[in-house]
Amino acid sequence: MPAASPYAKVLAAQKGLALSAVVGTGPGGRIIAADVLEYTEPIAVSTPAADTKAAAPSGAAYIDLPNSNIRKVTARRMVENKEGAPHYYQTMEIEMDALIKLRSSINAAQDMKTSINDYVIKASALALKEVPECNSQWTDEYIRQFAAADVSVAVSTERGLLTPIVFSADSKGLLEVSSDMKGLIGKAKENKLKPDEFIGGTFTVSNLGATGIKQFTAIINGPQACILAVGGTEKKVVPNEGPNAATTPFVTKSVMLVTLSSDHRVVDGAIGAQWLLSFKKHMENPLLMLL
Image 1 (spheres, rainbow, N blue to C red):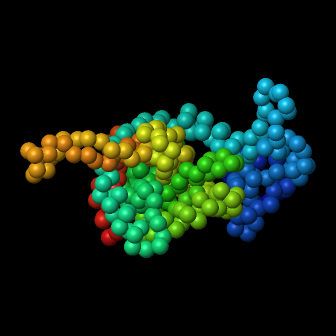
Image 2: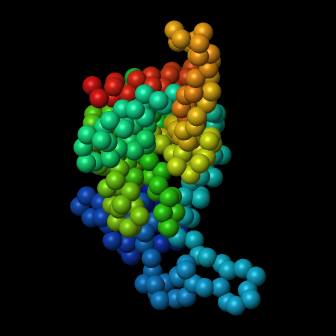
């Protein structure tokens, strides 16, 4: 039997697939989970059922679109993660005006343009260094706490949801984080991600702000302990607490809602709150991310 990771063996058994039919892309030709997920029998390539973009017959009430292997495994894992990990949720409001101003200055000063999500990734990684309990995963025998903050980022593709990883995001500058994300998103859309670029990670960010979503909760990307759901930025009128409050009693601020989903076996409510406060500190004082 060819060398294979434990997870690859489980997936192959679930699919009724012989490992000898799979080409390994891991170190030394070792079969990893992605090899099993991406395996397609040659005969399936030429069959009509494999064409997920086949047109519906004229007058048909519906069309059945075959699920990709990625979508099947993602669906199964989402059910396992939701049912197996005791989720709870904490939401915090983030003031965004300072970050928006800094981002505008950085983008105006050089050719590479940074996105809001780049700052979210960086702030998440720095918060993981300050609150390492959230950079962990559960096992029955121990809690594994990771040294590096490898941030997975949810990306929607035609094949399904993928989570490419910005490795060691805590030690990278914002421009490097931005460059990594642009490259990973491009690869994900073109189906060119290597398995080690999207399998793993220690924490996940899911950002739907660009779609107009204000707030949502996300299912933890097991075996990770936490996932951050990021909503869009919107204007909000608030009381003015500055020195000119007498003449200008109200001001407008840009705010964003984020919700942390945590596995209560690893991260209790107090720890989750500490992480959110650290994340908020870095987002509202973005110069800290440049130090």
